[in-house]
Image (cartoon, rainbow, N blue to C red; front, side, top):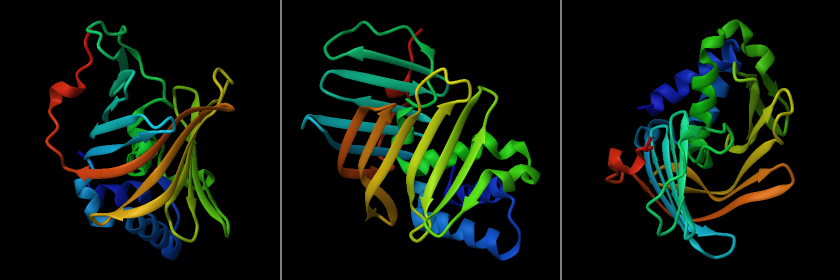
Length: 227
């Protein structure tokens, strides 16, 4: 389980900036998204509606996710994904998770932790070339061994995550862009009440958040991917 103090530590290891700027970056991003309150963000229940007005429920347990929509349920358990249609007992075959379709990334604090975890082992000496700072935005990016690139763009004024972009270095798939907006404070944690996921030019998912519960009673069985 990742907690708030780990969140700030991971970002510090990721960006390898020195002195005041490093302290400023970690403080801005960590505090903007909840700081110590992020201890409670490992288990999350999000309820809302899709753009067509249908209800949707997103459950997150560490790096596992379960998205329940009227027509289907989609699971992501670490490196595997699986889904099934509503009312069906037959599931799709478990398959390697597409990096951009991990539904835990629909919440910004999970997206930030995911990038930090993926690239913290690259070494702090490489961090500077994976960080961009302008008056409008601050952006982290890096390319992993799977040959895809992830970038996170933060608002330079608020420190809040505005975009997560995932793309293949070899162009094997169209870029996937998750955008976060309409942030509100929920139990001391910044939560976007509007989330969209585009795959290329196509709007693949649009979610309007209505309520968020931190540390709900989620069970491991809800996230099990069947063989």
